[in-house]
Image (cartoon, rainbow, N blue to C red):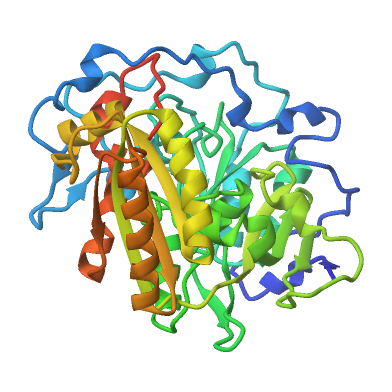
Length: 458
């Protein structure tokens, strides 16, 4: 059951100055003004120019390893250090999206001093206007798109998000929600001068049920931190991504992220039990149920899973976490061709059954990139394709025996030319680095910063 509620502005009476009462307005379907509904189309739908991988991509990164400037403690510093990626010296500046693509700005208002004062009353200390601090939030992770936002808002609560969106709705100000900014299609950065609404400070765990494994948390919680939190309680998150050290759970839900555990636990449409969402006019839609078997009325949360911020801003998530497996095994294999990869997958499902938790593959070109830029060697002999298989279960001996039988069959039938298996928990995570997607490509950032080229992660 969902509850729609509006937060009275009197909630902020204790602040230095009370906001004026704002008249109610009918709900709109997105963050665009009602007379221009098409403006709610996310930046992800902008036209992309996908070019062939150039030769310079396979060279080593220019300059010293690591493109970020380092502080006295050896950690990256500067505006881009927040998400762990800086362009190397000499890398061209990312062109503005509005100059690179044939897009036009719709008739939104521009932020005034009165707007900034109102935002400061709503989120004291959470209004960022420093141009240097705004560099990173304006640039997408792939360094192919750049907006020109002059305001970044960092609320802590759903009520603050509600007041922000209500004010923007009344003033006809465009808003761009942003989580960890790890997306690879530019949907998390502004196209023009939209206000960036960051969920970075909304990072609190609200509750966790130790019997059912139901976690309720704010949308700005980092996936890796949530994973550590539930693993300490003998549970795991139902999704795992290469960008887990930076991505937010709210962004994962808003993009319906899959991840390495999709094969075992399915999509977020099945594991997310409830959401709290703030609509464009500031109305808070409370569908934050923790009931797994809920057949009451419409399942409104499904509208917002995968909506990418076009229908509202996700502020809290209720998600079902599976029990932590007692035994995890990983095998890394080499296959002679793609047909063998497909046959290996079919055989894997048939022989491993319920313990199969992940099956990922990469080609020889991706492995070359890993060797060049991450300085990691393949644990198996050179092959046309590589496959990572993960099993998880409750009986280590049983799982190892099934995986061993599968590997023996795959090698004997020619599906696999070489392979290695890790059962030691300290070694199990190593093969995942090769398939970690954005986490691996992060160190290839100088290549990604070249204009006019977009490549995919392994």
